Every structure is written in C-alpha cells, then in structure tokens.
Amino acid sequence: MQRQGVVDPAAPPGRSADVPGRTGLTARLLAALASGLLLYLAFPPVGLWWLAAPSVALLTLACRGTSVRRGLLLGLVHGLTTFLLLVEWAATIAGPGALVALALLEASFLALLGGALAVAGRATLWPLWAAALWVLQEALRARLPFGGFPWGRLAFSQGESPLLPLAALGGAPLLGFVVALLAGALAWAAVRRTRVAAAVAAVSVLTTLGVAVLVPVPTDGAPVRVAVVQGNVPRLGLDFNDQRAAVLTNHVDATHALAADVRAGRAERPDLVVWPENASDLDPFTDPDAFDLIDGAVKDVGVPVLVGAVLDGPGDQVSNAGIVWDPVTGPGERYVKRHPVPFGEYVPLRSLVRRVTSKVDLVPRDFAKGTTVGVLDVGPVRLGDVICFEVAYDDLVRDVVTAGGRLLVVQTNNATFGRSGETVQQLAMGRLRAVEHGRAVLVSATSGISAVIRPDGSLQASAPVFTREVLQAEVPTRSGTTLATRLGALPELALSLLALLGLVLAARRPVTA
Image 1 (tube, rainbow, N blue to C red):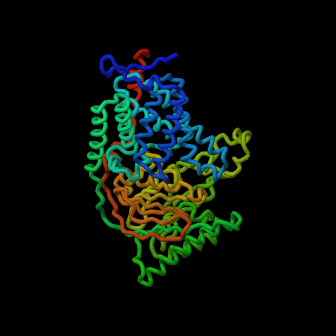
Image 2: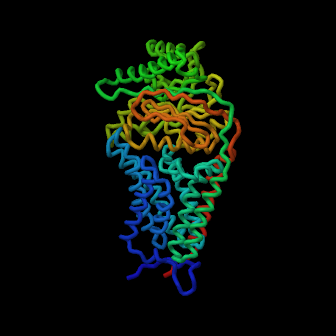
C-alpha cells in the first residue's frame, strides 16, 4: 500500500514532484546513514568541506514527504552516524560508554530536526525553512543541556572553504545557514528533476561563492611579535605527579631555549610569549618549586608570558587559569575558564551519576566557573583569552573582542586525545573565529597542534602533534570590528525565528496523497 506523501504545489501541472513521498523506509534510512557519513567526512581530519551541502541535502530529501515519526528516526540515524565518528576521541578518556552517551545526546537534537524537516517539507518554500531549521537545531544544541556542546556545527566544517569569509558578516550561524541553503537548492533540483532546476541550483552555488570571495577580510594592523610555546608531554612511564612536573619542565626548558636563541641572535626577541592550558598543573602559588621554575623562565626570556595553570580553589574546587607573568613584577592578571566542560572538568548531579558509573571519580574535584571576561594586558597587547573548548562557543569568543581584545589566544591541552581528530577539529574553529572577528589567533597547545592563524583564517605557522616547538611570528593587532562582531547573536536569533515561522506555516498545510 502506498503511503501518503506531500504534493509539491510548485510541481508542473499533472506531475507530482514528491518523489521522496513514495520512497520506502529502508531507502530513507540508508539515505540518512549516508548523509551522516558525508557530514563526518566534511569535518577534519578528513576535511572534505564541500560534502557538507550534499549531506544536508540528502537528509532533507530523506525526511521530506514522510511522517514526523519517521523524520525523528531518520534524524536520529543521521546524528548517530555523524557523532559516533566525529567525536570518537571522547572514548579515549572515559571509554566507549561515554562516546555512545554523548553521540546519543547530540543525535537527539538531529532527531528533532528530522521531525521538523518532515513538517517543513509540506510548504512551498521548504528549502528555506529547512536551512533555517539547521540553524535552530545548532542554536539549541550549543546551549542544552549544561551549557551545550556546539561540536559538529556546519560552519566548523568550512575552515578551508571559499565560503569562510561569510563568517565576517554573520558568524557561524550565517555561514551554517548558507551551507544549508545551498543544500536546499541541491535538494530542490533533485526533486524537480529538470535541466532548468539543475541550472538554477548551479547558479546559486556559483553566485554564493562569488559573493563570499568579495567579502572584505582585512589583515592589516599594528604588528606585534609573538612566541607560542608547545612544550610537549611525556607519554609513558610516569605517575600522575611526575607527569605534571615533566610537562611544566618541558615548557620551562623550551622557554629557556628561546631565550638562549634570542641572546645568540638566532631569534628576535618576542613582545610576549604564550604557554598552553595545563602547562603547569602544579599550582605555582602553593608549590614553591613550580613558582621558581616559571619565574626563572619568564625572567630569562625577559618578556611577559601568558601561563596556563591549574590553581587550587576557590574552596574545594580548582581553577583552570591563564596568568599574566611579568619578568619584573611576577604573576598578575588572570583569566579563569568560564565554561568548564561538564563530565570532563566538573560533574553535574555527581551523586546521581555515581549510581550509574564510578567513572565520575575520574574528575575528583570540580573546576570552578570563572566570572570575568578573558581580556588581559600582556606586554604591549590587550588580548582576548579563551581556554580549550571555549573556542566553540560564539558568545565566549565575541565578548573578549567587544571588551577590547586585539588578538585572540586559545590555550588548550589536547594531549589526552592523542592523534585523534579532536585537535584539528578545534583548530578549524580557531580559523573560523579569526575571520568572524577579524583577529589573528594564537593556538597554544601542550602537545599540538599549536598554530598562528592570520585574520583571514589562513595558517601562518603550525606545529605538529607530540613535538616540542616554539612558533615565532609577527602578527597584526586590530581594533576594528567585523559586522559579525557587531551583530552578535542577532543573525542566529533571526534565522531561528525564521525556522519557527516556517514550521507554523508548514504545519497548517494538510498532508495529501
């Protein structure tokens, strides 16, 4: 028995354009699975960015013309396929159970998207509503639960795409919307199955690429010389305390080597030095040896160093901090990470979760949540600091720019994730942030990938994983703001409201055979 579908009101007289409506569940499930695989391939480490639009188009076609219940299932299959592959590195810390739980959580939002796409497919302007729904789904996923997890946003797949300059106009939400809208054009052409429709889709893609190329991405600014220290981590044979001491020693030694190169004329003296997150897991304010090691290295290099350290307190908590360490006056301003990672740096509902798994004790002390925007004066530069996963959150990056940051720094520690895709996925986010806000970005990682990113998103320098290296570069410091910085969350809000409008209009249309 043929299931009911949706008749496209834009179809030529006498011909239904609703080919998806006549497609069986097995074919739709295969399409959803394939779309999830294609979306994974669009992200680093594979990085086939151009597959993002076909992936979205395939899921849109799979959900169009079917029931909401089936749309939910199709979205779930797509989401699980994408996230089990994309964040496989989550298993390296807490095991495969954590990976499955995280993938299920993120896929639940994609399931809701699938159901919404089934509804939106009834309306005349379904490609537009479908694109806006992707933005709404990503907006919810970036906030819920426990502050959200924005990994896997369409925009984060576009770090090497010619569409990247569009981030300067409306940030990650606008760039993601454009990718999804291009996907809508591809899906519409597939439904219409005419040469004219194919031509319209092709023109849409080419026009969008042309507009992106024309978006100005300024790279000028007062130059400052920076050094990014990647001290590396020991891999085997040390207990926890010795491991922490060795990591600190690696960064201290690399900084002393930089100072020696400067004295010997092999390197220019930098204006500032950046150490990564967790460069010192020994609190220098309670451990005199750690204090002396850091202070000696800073005095030797003779310029301010932004030191990543874990500090005891407040109370029984710990703090993930970036400390400005001056060669004359010692430690000064600090930034404490404002968005600790749930279940990674703190455990929500700890007593309840312990009934399910003892792995909560892998996080014995919760990290405190910082309350101050990460804008710090380091030598001649007022910079904006975000720590590790914070680079994925639009508001946390934007407010360090609006607060006066002329250079962006991402202090991170990816050593736990080994050689997985996590570090290159995070690097792609840094490239988007550079364009979005018109700022050079310094990524300082304990074990890599450290990088210097120009304001146009291109890599000026980088260090491979599990090497000790000091990146030295001259980068521009900028005070101007992009349209994306000025608009903030408005594009995301407008597109989310557009998605809701589309759902309301589509829901009022009857489902017909």
